[in-house]
Image (cartoon, rainbow, N blue to C red; front, side, top):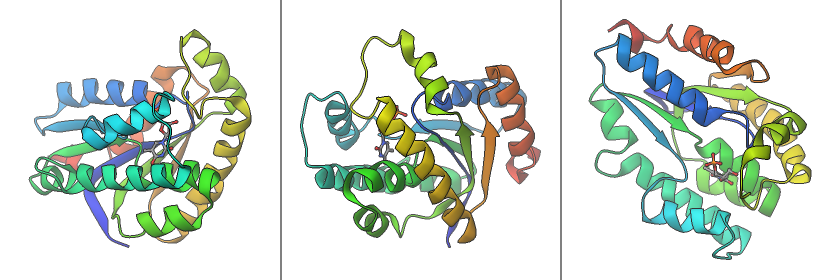
Length: 208
Ligand code: TMP
């Protein structure tokens, strides 16, 4: 399995706090390190990512298989474009992405079966560390109550499937040689952040 050093991915079901944690990490890292930090996310802000976002809001409707191809195409751009993940990690930046290929194996695996997402995502290199924010969907639902609009996957029945599939997919990913860390995300954000920090601060890039 190819691994991209200096690249970390946050994964979790909807409402598990990946975005909050990425912001907290970015804040602390940039205050304490001279190394450039690049926080990023999928779907990306690029043209394909924007198309996906409109599908997530149900403004555009795609066959689930077409959406699976779009997520993979967006990931190719994310990795290989100018100033993409590979270029940045190669020049010594620390890149952390809110979601990556495991999201496709989970969400599109549920939507269109395991075969297509497995095929489209098999060649993407793995991050140095994947952190899974472990939060049961009923608690996540409570946290998402304040949101004014929900996306196509954000309903409890689907999220229960997402949560179970994450555990299965991550177990297989770890067995293939990827480093996976699971953090209890039901605790207050500061405590979750400290756990993230204690795992990531062991990475060589933190020592530069
Ligand atoms: P977000 O809520 O973290 O912004 O992610 C957007 C949604 O897109 C979330 O419900 C997960 C979903 N998603 C997939 O279904 N497949 C993917 O490959 C990615 C990256 C996200």
